[in-house]
Every structure is written in C-alpha cells, then in structure tokens.
Image (cartoon, rainbow, N blue to C red; front, side, top):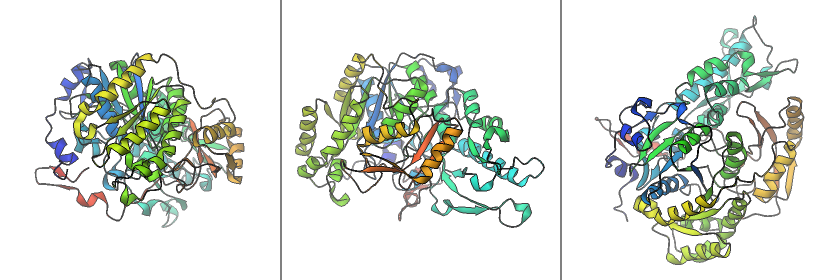
Length: 557
C-alpha cells in the first residue's frame, strides 16, 4: 500500500478535458463561460432556474475525528458513481480554505481517485473568490474605523460595541486579539479587535445564502455593526457600505465550473465555517446544479448534528430546497475513536472498539430520520479496515432498517461507488415530499435553540447565561426574533464539551451569548469556546509544500 500514489501525483498525472467540453456535458454554451484558463470557468447566474427539477442528495457524516471522515471524497465518488450507472449527476461543493491547506487537514478537493481538478488551483487561490470576500469584509472594517475617526460625518458609533473584525484566509493565532489605532490621533481610534479566518466571515455566509447580486447587496446593508453612544443600532447601510462591497463581489458571486478525475462536471462555490456558520456551498450553485442535471450531490460540514441540521433549517428553508436522500458517511476509525480508542491505534483491527462506537452513528441516524427523508450509511473504506469491523457496522444498520454500503471510492474512483449510487438513486427517485424541519422560524429564539439542543444533540435542556439573556432582549428590540439559529458548537461532540465523545447523555447545553448575523439572516448562539482564527500545528503542512522552476507544485494533499 506504500506504493499508492499521493493525491497530487494522481491529479498531476490525470488528463483533463478543456472546460468548454465539460460544459457541453450539461448543455452549457461556450458563450456562457467566463474562462479562467483552460480548466476553470465562471458560470452566469441566469443558468439557475426558479424551480429546478433535479434531485438533491445531501452527504453528511457521523461526528468526525480531527482528520475528517471524507464527506468531500464521498460526494465526488458518489457523483462519479451515479454517472457510471448512467445517471446525469453533478457535484456541487464548497471551495477550500488556505488555512487547512497549510495547516493540518490539507486541501479539500477530494482524495485518491476521486478528486476535483485542477487540484493545485482549487486548493491555492482558485478563481479568487476568497480574496474578494476578504476585501469586501475588510472594506466594511475600514469604513467603520474611518467613521470613528471622522468627526464631521461621525455616526457616533461607540467603539466598545463594534464586533466586526477583519479577516484573512490563513491560520494565524497571533492575530486573534489585537489593538489597533495606536500611534497618535491621526492613526485612528485605539480599540480592541482581531482577525477571523475568511471562512468565518459573515460575508462568506451572505454569499452562500444570497439569490443574486442585488440580494447580496441588500444583505450586506443589513449587517449589524454596533451601537451609537445613544444606544441606536448601526448597520452597514448606515455607512453606505453595501454598494462598494457588492461591487467587489460581482465576479465572486458566480459559481465555478471544474471537473472530476473522471470528467464529471463539478460546481464549487463558497465555503463557510460549519461550526460558526452554515457550512455548505451557495444556494446559487445548488440551484444551478439542479437546473443542469438530474441529480446534485452536495455536502455539509462536520457531523450531521452541525452540517445537516443547518443545511435543512437554514439553507433549505432560505432557498426553498428539499433533498431527496441523505448519505451519512461513517468510517471504522471514527467509530473506534467514539468507542474510546486512542488516536494512535485507530488503524489497529478492533471490532470491539467499533461496537462501542456505534451509539454515535446510531444517534446521527436517528437525527437524519427526523427530517423525514431516506438515509443511507456509506462506509468510507480504508485499507486497514477488516471485514469483521465492517460487518459490525452493517449488522447494526440492518437492525435499524438503514442500508449500509461499503464505498471504496478513494482507491477505485466512481467504480467503487456503484452499489452506493444504485441505492441512493433508488431512494431519491422514490422521494416526492419535502423534509421536516427541526423548528419553526416563527418560534421564539429560546424555543428554536432548545429544539436543536434536545432533538438533535440529545441534551436535557439549555442554560442561557446572563449575557445570552441580555442578547435575547436586544434581538427582540431589533425585531430579529424571526431569524433561524445557527448554533456555534464544537464538532467533536454532540454536546458543547469536546471531551464527551460517543453518544453523551444527561448534559445541558450552555449558551454564553447570541451574536447577530442580520446580513446572513441568522442568529449565532455561542456554546463553549469557538475558534474563528485557527493556529498552525507544530508541523504545518506548509513545510512540505514546494514549487519548482517550472511552476509545478508538490506536497499538497
């Protein structure tokens, strides 16, 4: 197995088709393409239909280990597999962030023989969407500080109430908490602030929930900035920021067309954090995929308690979307981890540890069934998995009435997902009803948070701390109680305590505060300590990345 080529070696040895030929497969005219070289193109917004007819398939997962369990890999492999059995399918996915690329997890273009290409471009800058989001976000930050400095046209903003930070697409812990405006009266107003990673920007969330550029501009105007000294709420529209912000995003709002290793069309667009924001690609890209194909395979970040819940209750409700089937990715290594196994021993055969970890998967299966849609467990196969370990999972899923299919897409490409594709398409074709949300947007904010915490996380209840109670009063005063909730929680546990692995019970979710993301159109209850600007690990992936004199990249994974 040591001779198996690396992801980047596989990608660089692939023969890619010109992007205009990929577009032809889904009936897109060359005149509609905005070329970014030979293998990438932007797609115009008019390609999305108001009521597309395609079937939407959501790929989510059990609670992950720190390495991830392969949702993107499975999404790409399933899409190739659907085309392999004669279906017309497109993968619609998020764009990678440079933070993980240079940090611990590596890129997010798939792996093995299921990747989207060109892998190097997608992982490094791509078409510049993240850069545009950075500029739009930081423009608002600059306008805020300029207004604080500008006495003639000042809005009277109290700098102590401004929560809008700056962003950059890089892991850099030194920028989490900083002081700006030092150096004298001409250098700005001194205040505490910091940087978040671009994926955590509200602009990213707005991009992925907007219907078009006009809607994007409107949402930018709705961004909550802070209060004046007279306690008046200030929004980005008060700073006349939304027009220039939207101008910076005129190209970034268009989805990106690329291809898989097997020449299947794939659309990549946006990439919001999954434990801070909604964790899934744009509504525009999803609708476009549904307009251009019979099946769209998409994914939502981290475990189903975060990604799937937010996908349904925020994205699908906002965009009037309804999936036809759910694929729940499970790995033997994650089951061992949630059974109490050591990270160092996850590749050692241990059917007993797999058995002990099943309650985590069982809870995710229960949760997905609450959306009233069919679910398939996809066992993402690793070469260290034994037949006995796999059988433990399949036996339990059979008892629960859920199909569990072994998928070997990493090693075998789309051909390793034939059985999964057959099962998913069969279930999707039988589904003709809308999903059931966890809560009604018109419920109170407390009721919405409690519904997710008790129904999805399995908590006994919710403890709203003093700051959260004050925030609830503020939200009511601003008339924003109708917004959905995007709960910020650790991805490592169903609870808000990352150490409670498996299927914890008897716990209470503690809400420290509730942030307002009025532009994106949701509220963010904060549980636990949320990291919006990650740091690099002791040995960053960046140390292995290099480029030769001819521009050939090495070391990406």
